[in-house]
Amino acid sequence: MYRTVAQLDWEMASLAAFAPEVCTRFELPEPSVEGRTIHAMRLRAGDGENRRGVLIVGGTHARELMNPDLLVELAVDLVVSYLTGIDIVLGRRRWAARDVALMLEALDIYLLPCSNPDGRNYVMTVQWDWRKNRRVDPETSCIGVDLNRNMDVLWGVTEGQTSCNPCSNNYVGPSALSEPEARNVKHLLDSHRIVTFADVHSYSELVMYPWSHAPTQTTDSSQRFTSLPSGTCLPIADPNYQEYMPPRDLQRFQTVSARIVDAIADVRGRRYTPQAGYDLYATTGTNRDYAYSRHVADPGAEKVYGFGFETGPWAGSAKESFQPADPAPIMREAESGLLGLISESICAIELIGSRLLESDEEVVALRRVRDELLATTATGRDWIALGERVQSSLLGCVLADKGLTAQAATLLRATTKVLTNDAAALDRDTIAQAQALSRNLLDRAQSAETRNDLRSMQTLLERSQGQTVTQVLRALMADGPDA
Image 1: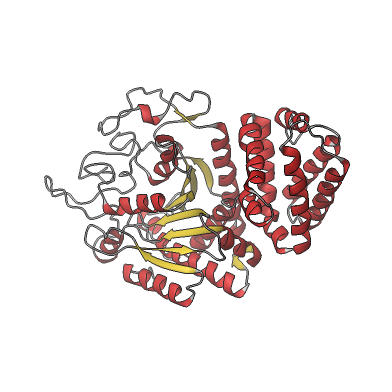
Image 2 (image 1 turned 30 degrees about the horizontal axis):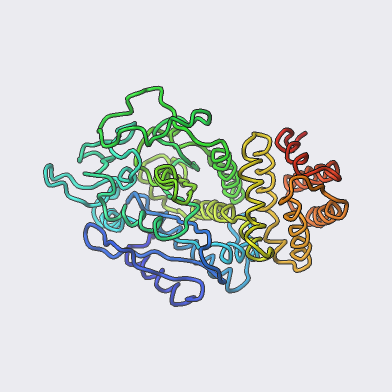
């Protein structure tokens, strides 16, 4: 029922041969501990350099058999939908072909279906509940490192379910990134412009995000993991320690997680729980925390929003929970959640800049308003979240309609000219263009949430006419959409 390592690799190779214009299969730099070649895939359509990337990893824990199969099926569905123009239908959730095309044309999607092939092979031939890779510890003869404890973020700090005992299921390994399978994940993050990461596990019906080693707080930026000692084989010395995260990042994690949960629930009604990793249990050295932590440890690195999925519920026994007799319903809903994550990774500002605007200066102006002004207050962040919700629902519709695209382009050019002059006022023509676009979008909005968001934008436009940019931004940063 579940694909073997060889079958997974054959299916990846077949898909790449069938659709080389959309799918590329490539070998990662390091073979597994037992010498198996490990492959990943890149899915993309259209042109453009230095595009935003999404990296999704499966099979980190060997016994969680359905997730490598899930990633291969996700790849097949994306490619077939793009080539045929057929929607992806997952239970009660339909992903429109135009939105799938937008994902592939706006992003580079990297999939590593089976990051731990030795462990998977061992599970399928010897021991069903094996979790780790297959490294042999020379001193104890114990086997295996937990690849989700081996990453270079507080490695060897034994919070919660993290252990320096080579015989433990949660063994951190002899050093950070000691395992070739873990270094392959690092290589993908190093080699591509990844902005979103997901590590897909089983079970518990969760969508998780950092932090995992301590509770998250958003007020004391001096509390960073970079100041804590690693490799201690001891827990964090201060039991009251809380890890800092900028409020905008926490909001982003929470907003995207909520959208993922909705996408999963649309399939058959199962509602996953969005939460920080620490809320499940404390741990260190995880893939998702490492992906996000990299820009903190190295301010020159790209910020990567790192997520973790726990697919499927407790099913009465560990074996049935990790390896359901019928994984298809779980895989369908998890695929919808991953499509939701991919969709949320599209940045309208970048996409619009490449397609509609004439210069990078206009994109910089839009980013400045979002990141340096609105993101500094809670109400401003609420407006950002509203805009992201509207984008998620309607960007594909706009870009698929030449009339709407032209209308949006005209409005954006006018708006960005105003944004470069804080003393400039929003004139009647610009407001009228924005109101006309908003009305057209309202006619196409399919959800009550999107319609309410558009009405909030219309109210904002009505009271903004004649005001300067500074006045409008002050109002946005003081009063949220509900006001």
